[in-house]
Image (cartoon, rainbow, N blue to C red; front, side, top):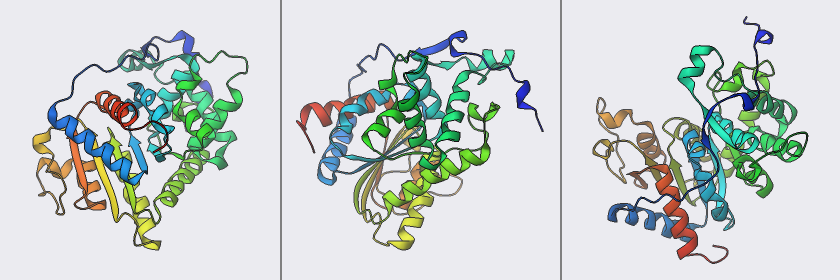
Length: 318
């Protein structure tokens, strides 16, 4: 096997990063009438059901969409968050370094891609707090280690830390070899597998018997729909009422002409473009007749969801 102890791991301070957490600018693009109607429908749905399961991909964090989550979290409507392992990379780097996103092309060429201290810290967190799960374990690591021998420029920007402090379940569902943490000498595949599987079981537990809720999938084409599909199957096996009044909204950048339509109960034709767009097909299977899709930039969606949910409709708790 490859001897990882030969690798040269460098500090983040030695790396050029493309994205800084500060400043966090408001997203200024205006909404079309259709987009505004779509978001207003979601807001009304959340106001009625008061429970949200939020799923997203790594670009959600890299694009700083989490900035608009903090106030939404204060309404107590978010009952679970699910994402992939790559999200934790950007999340940790914002908190620890204030910047994220290396130049993959350049660093692949020079042999440094992923070989920064980020992987060392995340692996240490997983190894130390395995029994808490990946999400809570990393959150606890940030809480316990944040003031030791390092100035953390943006710990408050960490979604893992915010979820840990607010006791919101955060499921990090990772895939072996997908993330830079697997390159590192500290990586323990058994520990990562155990921690991530704990998070998966936490999601199934949240879903069990859940009948009135809103599922938001913002920019996750594979991980969130695939993980939700298996977790809800487990939940329905022991509690058949699971999902009976759950509505789902998928926000991504697929061509709307190929989105196969909203609130469908059937399958897209095999061979059609829509058949291969995983989140639309999979979520429609989970929530037949109650799944809608809108093509929208995730920054734009989260800004206006926050703007309407907090500024217009809510003054305190939902």
